[in-house]
Image (tube, rainbow, N blue to C red; front, side, top):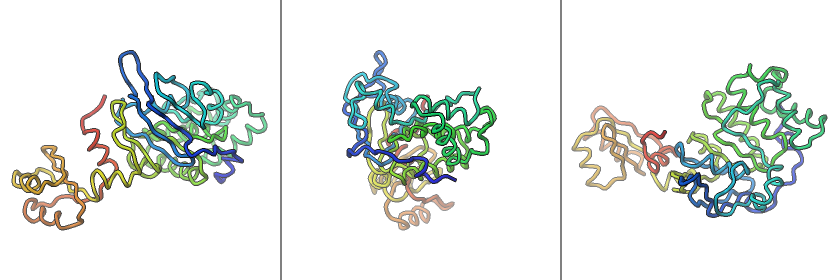
Length: 318
């Protein structure tokens, strides 16, 4: 397998502290406000995540960053350049892995990469060399002459990732890169992204997978209804909003609810289930199990998903 340094090649990295700077970013569609004047900064060489429920504004935000969707207001700089004025120059140094499968079904795996390289004025010989390196990097070299219609979903996502790297980008934008994939395919993509991170490439990621965000992101925001709810390091957000541990009790009794409320313990009452957030690793759990929950309950480490659900709610989104 090709080392990620070969995939990235000799790169002239952006030298500023923040590769993306968004200030009061606004996007409207008629009367609907999709992104409501949010501000954030993506540090150079880091992975920055944007999390949120369906319709929260994640994809709309990144589409403005790579120039696909014009801003309705605010300021947005990428590589220190104004996206509204210098978008052609910016796009040349960005790689984009979109949600949709935009591969050409009439071309082979190799041809999809070689033809895409033409958008960046790459000589044919250089494009072939880079395409072969990328296919090796994503473990698809053995399928280089196969039509993309013969690939599995995981293979297609890996090929879209490879295509986004064809121009040796300084900024890689990933819009839900592993949605719908089986665990094996998802972990393969995570491994490749981890290798790219190790070489200093900057990543802007949207995802619905909390494990993905926790594993890859140095910093993230959670947005809902176009607004930023919180920002921080995944571990810091977990400690700040839910603590170290979670106790889950099925079919809680009235006595248990009174006990939790009397001690003003942070919790969520879902009716059929009670979720208690706590720092201690055993005393509270033992008390609840002994006095209120003879059949036992579950104690586990708090996760980013707990933070996400606590802040955005648990109702289904369409």
